[in-house]
Structures are given as C-alpha cells and as structure tokens.
Image 1 (tube, rainbow, N blue to C red):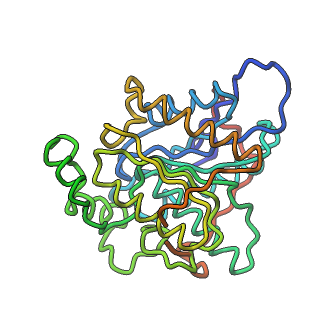
Image 2: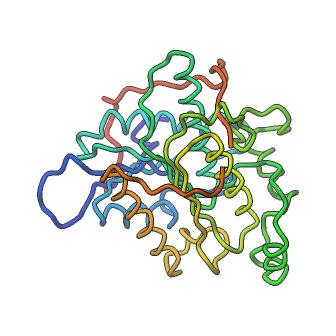
Image 3: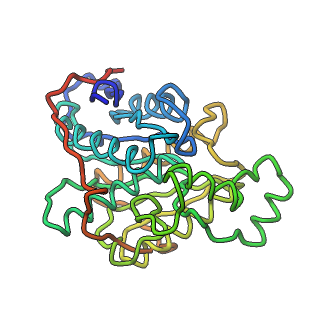
Length: 305
C-alpha cells in the first residue's frame, strides 16, 4: 500500500490565518473490530475534521483490515509507516508535538505500535516516540477482566449495549491474529504486556464508555500504566455505550473532542494533567515478525482535507 492510499491528512483550519509551528499533530486510527471501518466513517472523518477545526492537524490511517490473508502485524505495520510519515512531515503541518491515538480496535493497534517502538528503542533502534497517546474506549485484552457488579447490572438492563462479552471479544482477536491468542505478543494484545515493557510509555489519556464491557479493559490497562510510572488519565463518558465518537449527533462525541483538545493544550503548556488512578507493563526486543517497517517520506502526498 502506498502512502497516498494509506493516509488522509486534515490540515488545521482554525481562523488565526497565521503560520504556526507549535501545533499538536494527531495520528489517528479508527475502530471497527480490526475487520471493519474506513476513512469516511464518522469515527475517522468527523473526528479528524473536528480536531482540524480546532487547530489540530490530523493524519487519519486507512490500515489494512483483518481477514483471510491479512492478519497481525499488517495493521500494526501500517500504523508505524503512517507514524514515520507524520514525523517526517510534522514541520510542514506546523506541528511541534505529535500524539498518536485510536478508537476501540484502532486504540489497540496504536498501543501495540507504541510498544513496538519502545521495544525497538531498547534494542538500540532510535525512533521518535509519541509525545502522548489518546485511547478512546479501547480493547486491549483478548481475555478481559470481568465487569464489576454495577457495570454488569447496567449492561443487563441495556442489552443493546451488551455487545462485548468474552466469546465475542475472543473471536475478534482470533480473527485479527489469524489463529489462537495463546502466545500472541503484547503488540497484538497490549493487556499482556509486563511492567517492564510499559516503562517509558508516553503520557496517556483514556476515555472509556460508561455502558461498555470493554470499559474494564481500558481501566485495567490504565492501572497497568500507572503501576509502570506512566502519566495516565482515565475518564469515563457517562450514560453512553461503546463507540460514541462514531455517533456525531450524540453530545458525548463533542464532549470528548473538547476534553481531548483541552488535554492537548495542557501538553502544549508542558503540564499534562495526570490521574492518580489506574495502570500495567513494557516490551521485548523486536523480532522479524515485529520489526518496525520503514517508509520514504518523499512518496506521493496523501489526500489533503
């Protein structure tokens, strides 16, 4: 896949009219259970457009979807190629800081990509790390912790929101991996990372959905990050089920964009706000199956929006 087909770039469109070199660039991966979604879905296009309107340029990634013949690490490789393109082109986009983020399965893929970058750095490969990570209602465990009593009762009372039970989540990961989850690397299932593998992970904001069994995955991973000494904030959008960024008409979508934009402002000020709550673990030396791919930043420019 060429760079021009892999990415869609949303230039910042705030009304200042002045050249900027101090923006925060967001490298963004939509969700879709690893197997669905595209650059035109609201979770990709609407999200990127709203951030661009606020002065945050976005590189939206059209990673390869899981299915027959396309399994891990294909999507992870695509995210790393997109990341390197963003690093090479950040100055052109007026950005000083680069944040990587994703929603749902996209949050898993970008988290795994960061773990691969961390692993490569421990092996002596110098890679620019993200300045921060934003994860929206992430799935990070193939076998996730059971929900607490209150969440279980809320899901029982809202069966339409109860879509991510153990069997459904396991099937989703098996499709992504093309086989069993046993022995899968943390780059594919970040919730299996060790504490040492998480040390050095960038400051992270996690926004979970209230009525969502995947919430326990996001909360557990936040607790793992905190235990590894990572600056992590974990918050919950109230009264909403999984995937609210894919529903622009829901007030929670705009609230989350505003919340993340304010967090970007904190990053720009050099004082990201940390949460004392929630956190986990780190990475292993890269192997041939998880090596960081390279890309030529002089390839054709992606679509600019």
